[in-house]
Image 1 (spheres, rainbow, N blue to C red):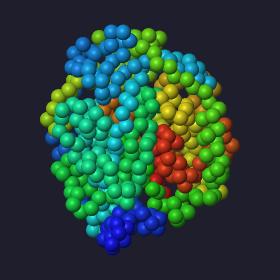
Image 2 (image 1 turned 90 degrees about the horizontal axis):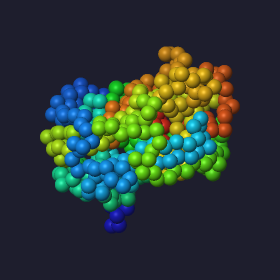
Image 3 (image 1 turned 90 degrees about the vertical axis):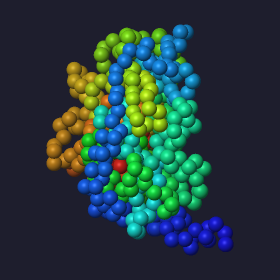
Image 4 (image 1 turned 120 degrees about the vertical axis):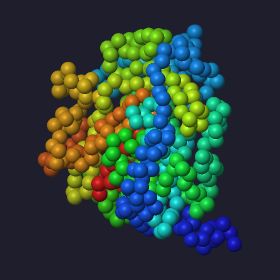
Length: 470
């Protein structure tokens, strides 16, 4: 019997997961399962609170000269690890034809490794479940958040730090192609990372994979509900969840073939923006980044805005390494990532922007309607603010469909949070848009998510939020 035939005869096998009708129905059943097929909501919160107690981190701000294993390069001022691995903090000079400011310098995190963000899925009692991890990160506001099954840089999973092995890693290293549900490279924050990418994976596993003490099985419905809790589902979990195939695509709910713009028009618009927009980034010694100054404790902009680079000392008895120190990027202010939505011809559409960020590999990725830190623009007249920001700030509570403060990457950023909003606009809200914006259906977005570098990490969180609404 060949491999495909054998899998077809195996109950719960991966191949039975892949025909479109079966895939959609299994995902839909998991999305509707909110009663806790394996773990009740009450049991989850009790388990998670216990994980938070057991995984408590001690994170202390320190001076740069107290960093262990990190040093400023005497020639460039770049901040690097002695091993040459993990990541570095370097400078760049940016020139662009996009936005109010056309040229600037800034520090940026350079991490050329491609990490693995993977969620293992398994059918339990006839319902698909996701294996999620309670993972502590030094930059999290609450230490522990719900993460993918595997969340590891290459330096981590090859154990450059000399720590313990990453659990469940073998599920994602060279998996059986017939068990792969999703596998795509996706970007991270293009304003803070230079061309950073991670491999986002969903792989089906068998009954031999069980949840360890720091892991639990949850349905898609439970995860959707937990997404509304502040700082609970971490950024890495959200980006992998966005790469799941949309279980509503076959039903027409996602708006297949009925968009304001055709699929070809949307793809052509994205390609046109990439071809038209101009942005150049040049490496710059960190010591030469104009407007940025280094003290004993931080590298900050002279205006006090944007972000700082700080140093922390961390200790944990539950991580791969019990103690370490590292730099973190600390943003200034609570950012907003908001998506305006509207029914056009009876079909839900979302208003996406073609964003240019210096760390993007392909110049432009689709972002939320509004993505900014509002307090940075409070002193400016309305014409100099980000487009549609006033519509977000003046939203009505009854039109706010999703509202949650969620954390960004806690392994590289210190207390970085976004307020994620999905806002339904009135019927008379203009359908015509500026050239850098387009109304896009959910079906069209789901198609773009099959490919790399089309939606930025903030937009991917909002896509997951949108899937909980319909």
